[in-house]
Image (cartoon, rainbow, N blue to C red; front, side, top):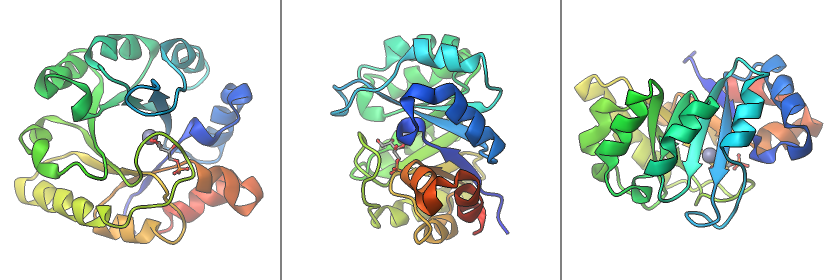
Length: 219
Ligand code: DX5
Ligand code: ZN
């Protein structure tokens, strides 16, 4: 069985109880916490920023997998690093200089991820693949939880896995959006090793998050 990590998205959590929700996820076996940061500009939704992450950081030791759907992103990277993000994932379209933003995240001793929207091809980040820790493949158009998985992205996952194996790169392949019990196996066999999920984890099996995390891991 492949070692799959689950990164539950707190976008589907109870925002009035985020501390407890993160504790619940930790107790339920989450490998990290996916924090969706949205600015209402890069995506048509607005969520949380560094102050909330800083507050949550105090009470959790879990890896904070912070997905920045904000633009321009470069000038905010340090704020999120200082707030306690462990992985900082940015969208190439949100920075004037992807290499500079990647270097900025690395200089702050954080893991760096780059996210590809459904229509964004691998080749726009191919040159950076050797320098990054994670590729976040969006399987929905970013902005909201509960959307339908876009199956075309399976091909992109396979391409990323092929490059990773051929060039012996070490980046994780994380997939984010519409992940459920029927598509998770296809996504993993295509090459993903981290699954993000909000709706499936918080809503399926009457909200039994432990069962839902375990079921997603069974691939
Ligand atoms: C969407 C976010 C995703 C989303 C996943 O913009 O990046 O992380 O919350 O949620 P589900 O699993 O509900 O599709
Ligand atoms: Zn996300």
